[in-house]
Image 1 (cartoon, rainbow, N blue to C red):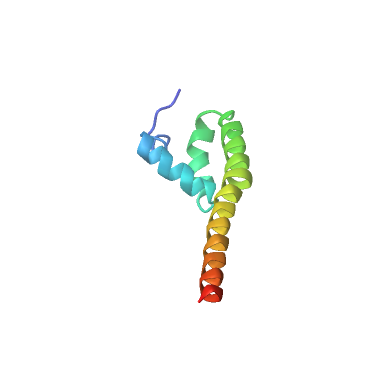
Image 2: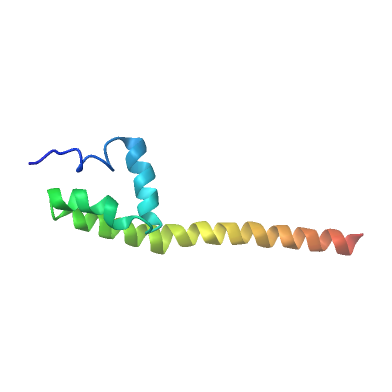
Length: 85
């Protein structure tokens, strides 16, 4: 098994992995994060595939829905405050 600096560049520590997987979730830097792990073992593709499906299709939508609900509640409160005055 190879152990080069390039392979450990993105997933070296927990904080690096967390940040780089967050960037990967936005699909802005997806190939750069995946390719070093993919070159080590091609089965790592399945981890990134499942991660991207879960992160982009489920987690991102839940975050956006939460922001929308907060925004909708704020607009509703503002409306009721204006009508009540």
